[in-house]
Image 1 (cartoon, rainbow, N blue to C red):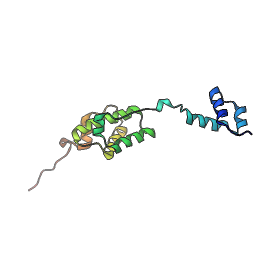
Image 2: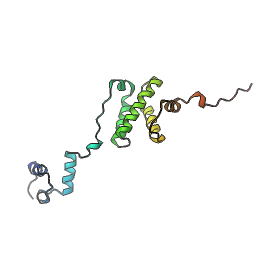
Image 3: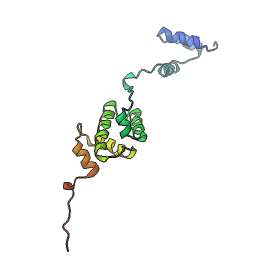
Length: 144
């Protein structure tokens, strides 16, 4: 076996074909070569999503809340459509909360959206969840 040279590996990469004989001569298994290629040129471009916060979103979300959302996307718990729905709901909810959306509120929003199964969530439903409307609360009569 010859000494492994980067030029030899690059020749195989440039050829566009997996040459088993050349790989064997270099002491590289086909699996190792595929792992190298995946690291060099990721093939899962459909999962890539580049998102930065707009100025108004920066004012609404804490860095922890946005980081939490990015983490959920990175581990594929949510897709880009769900990501955007959560962002939209967060922006709407902020109008009524009158405070930044932090990680704990973001977690509640995510859980509600995921586990409710609703495709379109109205602002009224969100307000019911986060505030509970007085009409939903049963008040007992005061007994003197």
